[in-house]
Length: 561
Image (cartoon, rainbow, N blue to C red):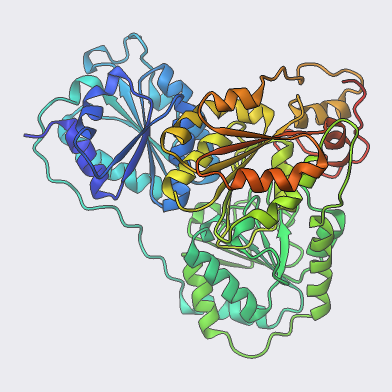
């Protein structure tokens, strides 16, 4: 007879889970034991629960099914909270399975006990504690439903250790399948009519289109109607960036010329996104509560339609299905003004063109990022950490799907190494490149051991300017001549990385950029490039906010070193 721990693993298997990420703990040892003989599930052991959570989220982003993270009670759960926050912000399905004290000790302030229902009340979609082993199949099934339904997000399941070895006789539920939400023909025809009457349309594409089918449907609809398209915050890989209809992303580096042009649109179509503060430029585009142009919002979660801006046409459906149906019924020639398309495209090209620069205190990291495009494979996966390095990547990486950009929308610093390792585990034959700053890199650098252990050919590129650069930049602006707390005392990175068995390279001169990138990318296993970066250049020419988002700032010269 199976025990509760085996039923948990059985339910994961039924739902297509083939990899879990963990830091082992005594509070869920029976679950680990149940995984011992399961060849269908890869157990990835991490050095920190936060990294295990990041990896599970990256796996969810790449597979479309919930990532699974297992951690021990108390400290383990606390370390994993960053993953819960990130999953909620990034709209990613996550199952966090957490060990718990025995049932007889619950709510008695026992050793390492936490009431997870109270702890995660603001961030998890659902938090539950299993106190009856017979309910394991039911609760796991509901966990998958909660994580994937509506807007995807995190679910926390607490496992009191004494239930895990109890015998369970239970029928396993079938795997969860999201309901089909096809658009009504009236809605599709209404949007078709609005598009055919528009001279200056603009489409905002969001994360619900982040799959091969969604990207294809988006491109087909944009080309059919000649709709200029921008992508929501950090969703550069939804649309070919070199396409004449690609008009950039709605992040922190949007120029005044771009925003002025966007506001001149006569029809705004938002497809597959929540209208959060970043994409809407601080809830100003579209204007709240009523846009100045006709506004259409297409999303499969009614919770977020009309919340901030009242739409002229609201369509609650699968956004991919809507775009596919729209392309099928499209009739007549587009009347979109060619001058409108040219104006938007010119603004985007100006914004995303890097001007080669030099500095006296090191290599200008923007020169490295701009050169990186030529060395990326057609199906490369580019992973961004947070900070100035990420800000440059968002602005100057010219993404061409099926290339992917894996970024954290929550702005979580230190996720880069973990995310890159998880991406390479899922796609070991694709080129994976991680771009990070020295501050963020060190936060999860311990997972280099996993990259070496699994022989994953990840390329890590780290900008070393000896500073929490984005915070330093903001500090220089807000409190001139009062720099404190942002300097970093760094290790010998080459020696540190090579102690794991990872090959290290250094770019310390501008004329070595191409040679070093080529050499590092030719390595069979993981490789690491340290760029001795200029802090002067970062602070004076590349304004980056504390969340790692590029902004316009030209006056922020450092006043102390």
